[in-house]
Image 1 (cartoon, rainbow, N blue to C red):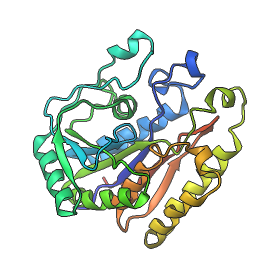
Image 2: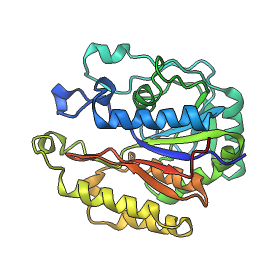
Image 3: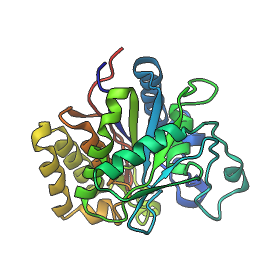
Length: 282
């Protein structure tokens, strides 16, 4: 059996247009990013057909020295945002977990010298908001358990690559790894940026630099991606790094598989770039 591909999806957010001016693709099926997430979702359900999904989201980064793995079998959603219109807090995403898979992940992390423990929690919006687009329960349901793993509480990309390497063996067991974040993510500039038809300069430059770094030959990829941390536009494209770092988990899990940007759209102070490492057979 071939290894499953690894995905990095730019998930957008749940920001209401009336507050920030940012398109909310969960409610905008005509937005190009919604359609691209649909394509990725259909590729996974029709070609990859995984028996499980392991997901890493920008929105779960506990402030401690141990990672957390969701061991819940019955998984709800987490409303990890505040002050939004009431209908946001009525959103649901039907899914199930797998304690068996979660315990296997914990064992892999421990074998790699990574501190980790099991918890029970719901999926955060970095997962459910994007999965509602990619795996619409009515149109393209994901018939596989989802286990979410937290991110390290650091900004050192080596920790994220190590995490990806630690779980990479799951790919040979028909488990797909999905990392969610944003290729460029600057909420501070969003209101200003959405007033212009052109993306901000750093959105263009960093989005293209990320593509170059990811698409180099795999043997040079870790060094190439580490170089992004030295770019002068880094802290403009990502004032905080939590939306960028999940792609380093994906790169670590990918091993010798080639990275490829599937699509991008630069919009204001955001980039919706979607990536895949490896190929989707089937």
